[in-house]
Length: 282
Image (cartoon, rainbow, N blue to C red):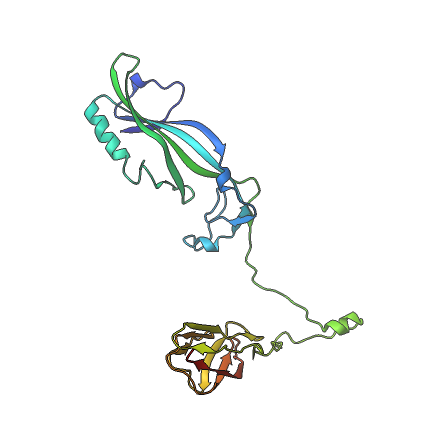
């Protein structure tokens, strides 16, 4: 089977059949896919070298402004001499990787991308004759393929290998003195601490309960454990500080509990907080 783009000088009478002709019918801006900003190009643009791990698009060094989304329309016409051949050809073209009724796609090997392909209409079947008067069976589809037009230059990001820094004491520098600092000195982070507002409210038997412990300083995420005491029956504590459950028994008086807090710094910082919780029957 011959597949080719139609040109004005093409004569059906000179062709072999079955035949598929593709005709470009229009191009328009696809405003539904408009976006602003910059985007990483997950393939090596024409004329630019691929990166070492070309199979990982997240490592692409190429970026550009968001392209203008376009919709390119085509008409696809299939021609056969026999009706049986047309029926068979339509069945082949309707397969999922060719012209499916939905979820169509078009692979572009030149840049390794996959484009959306929508069937706008068809197949519409007709019968005609070529320039020699011989009968032809025709089936036509209208399709739309997604595309993008980059209006700006492609930016090529070069990975930084070495960074040279001169660190000085800010107050001394402001006073006109350059006091070198050791770049290996690590500034101490703000100490981790449980929030002073942590105060679990009273719970009721048979009523779902949930309360979140919070903290400040240090390096999130925080990790909570129960270091001393026992939670009322039916309640539990998650690592991220969620008290939850449905109490099953009352407490005679508020239960005193010691919670341990650890941040994600290296080395980690540790803090503790003593809280109380009570469960009533009504």
